[in-house]
Amino acid sequence: MSNSDILSVVFELKDNIMNSDFYVALKEKEKQMMDDSECFKLLNLYQSVQEEYNNAKRFENYGGKVVETQLKLSQVKKKVSDNPLVVEYNMAYKNLVKELEKIQDILFDGIIFKKKKIEIE
Image (cartoon, rainbow, N blue to C red; front, side):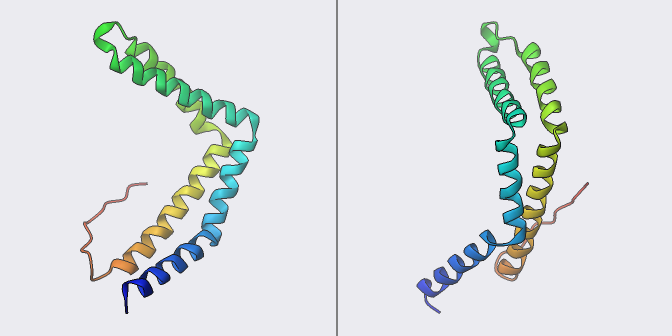
């Protein structure tokens, strides 16, 4: 089998993954999050506060308010984590990752030796 044959099969696999139920479910959950104005604002707020925290860390030696900003970030992160649309998205994302790991295990079985992994849920 030539390299171009292998690449052709890989691209076919990619197309099949992108048309799979678990990938389509993830994209639907992502769209629901982005289309919901409250969730969208919350995600933007999280990014903004995260950037604020990163700047505070960067300028910590020059009076950056790291602890104050870290608390603010923690509060916003909790709100994001509790949002039902984010919860659904995260579940769909975990499902996708599990399926991709199964595919990866099959694909590379006997080619690349896998490190032991401990899952705690």
